[in-house]
Image (cartoon, rainbow, N blue to C red; front, side, top):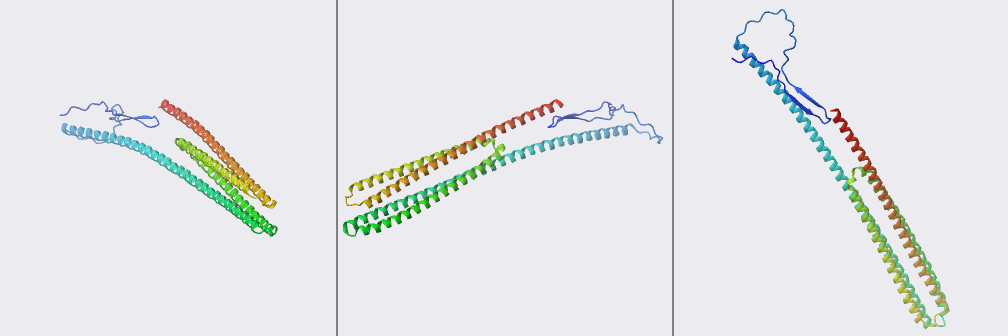
Length: 351
């Protein structure tokens, strides 16, 4: 026969801490024997029970108590497992969202930079082709002028008596040709100016758009500031290379012009004294036209240098704006960290 059951309560203490710092205890115990017994009611007197029946009922009660304790412990453990699983899933989802957002923004920034570089390279290639065409037209005009001068010299040698009449006709043709050349030159200069204005406007629009996108996404892309700085340095290097290339082209053109002038000077020295004053006047007009072409080329070079300086100033302003925005973002981040630290400290002290 089993010994009588002890009246001492059975306690199971389970301590669990949540993210907020709060803790609680789960205490499982038998009902206290010190509780007042309910008043007796006028019920029929139970029949007497044997010792075996009493022992069997005590064993059943003990089994029921253990089953209830096990179910309560299982419920608490399952709840703790669900809380841990939910916290882990929330952290994984947050990390995945941050990684996906950063990757998408990096791809978008790289695509924008590549498109802008390709567009600028295309515009530079078009401008180079246009300048080559202008140079070809200029050479063609010089060749036509040389041919016309040779024709005049031949006619002067072959027909001295008709020289005055032929010179008049040739001078009229030269004047018409110079007017046409002037019109063509003005048209090319206007086209070049319009093209440069469109290039500047598109570059400004692209730069403003890129700056606005960077300012909008800069808070979540602080880690990529080094890449942006490298891209800006690459743009500056390419602009410097383009500037040097344009300077070399201008120097080469000046050298060709000087060589042409030297050749023309040698030819003028070899000319005979039979060249009339009208031909000398034509030659002087030609020299003036060459001086004007050279002057316009120098003016165009100065405009390009001014445009390069403006682009460099815009790039410097954008870099300073980025540095200022990084500094403000760093201050905001430091403030958030201080606030979070203070909240954690308050929660710990309250817990």
